[in-house]
Length: 329
Image (cartoon, rainbow, N blue to C red):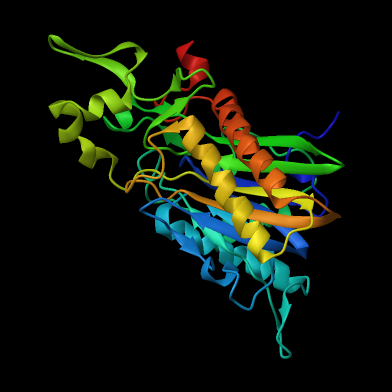
């Protein structure tokens, strides 16, 4: 079977590790031979590690892994497990007395589903590395997407289970662009025709019904006193994180631009996106030797992000009393 995921990009391996009972997990994107990297961080509530090192004016030119994890800020510890895994294999930046693996990371908040006491840690991060392969990664309830949900304006009681999704696009001339996205948005997932594919589930409270169909519209809710009064329920409970990768040649400036253009994909399929309640963060990786225009790579990266978000929603299954689209049909 053809590989229609980010692992079809040379030099990319992906591994998941998770605790289904606790509804949390982590996903590692391994690039042991090194990958030029950039990052775009637009959400107002980020949880990240080593992202400053990816800025074009800074020393580090390549990374050896990217860690995506649940567990809020606790989940950043999963990157330590990836560092240990890589150090054991003598992978990292040679600083003379040691090799230091460069492992940027980003986390999402999933403490409101499952158990808030169990979070991704160094051991889970190490396990994800052990599970890494070039096979097509699992989608939906897997890795960093295990506890992912969307539509949380009215709290977890009206949310929809989301997950992690893959996509791969052909940009022409032998250039490929892949995306791996963990979807944990505050707002709604919007389809290509503007329809709400998933979001806040409609609810009847006494004589008042919020929403006309299966889903309420988060923007419409924000116009109402009821919607504004419950904004605190969504505080810090979100964030969409992910990676786009290409076999095109990019320098750090190019990778940073591709990450920025890829983030535009989130604005196309999530509403609202990049709020103060989200820590939306997208990494970009270049591992190949194909010459390509950075604008073309970025354009396809945004499209790959959109497709990965849709795939995550389709693959997700209900968990911890939070239904998925599969359950609601």
